[in-house]
Image (tube, rainbow, N blue to C red):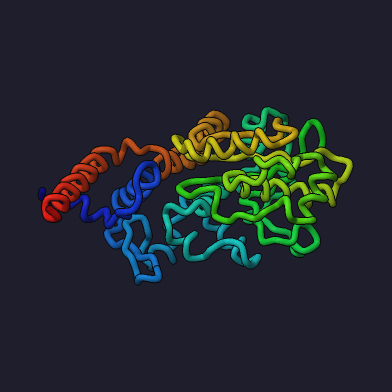
Length: 329
């Protein structure tokens, strides 16, 4: 079966991927070629050698900041890099499927338009947010040993001024990755046990708290609770908002599993990315903000734009698979 030259221009796809991760990678490859108008694609280092992928930017395009939709997102990346360790400079600037890049593309414009951010968070959390008082990306305290003693980081750490007083918010965002990158036996950690006793957020003797699927969310929420309770012991624990990609059933189940082990399940807000963009669209206050929403939707959500080529890609993959089975007989 002859391969459409347009598929070749999109670049190699990962043969090991299927389902939603494969579809996400393909759309980002399409965006690189069709929207950014870049023919070259980048490579990823591996133990077996460099591997080319259509969803990785070539070095010169990564250096030019093309992984960021807006100047505000690029500026947020530069600002966070100056703060030190936390943001992966290669993955964030080169990998178009990076959750960190998505987080920057989402929060960059909101940080640049604080009133818009307050309107968006008010709608998502169903509370009256007057102001975002503090925002940190890939947050960890300066001295982790004084809190939980591990290397956990929070995608977004916000303190909000609301009609009910100060509120802390932990934000976790997932794109093409999973919630089980690292697993710590939290019930064996003295710091986590002490925090659970102090805040009454979890029962760490409940076997469900030891599941790999909830480990990352529990650690991130716990870090927020440890920092917040040190600052304001009289205030309520932080809320956690988890943003997943539409159709990510594993992510949705992980959030629901975490909600079930929280002794205060109302502290969890689960949304997917298209819900966030819908709220952002409904709360825009300027033409610039509307352009941001439109650009973000094309980059991340409008898979129908690459659907025809995706179907052709699947047809080519099936044809190759049939050919390989024929040869092996």
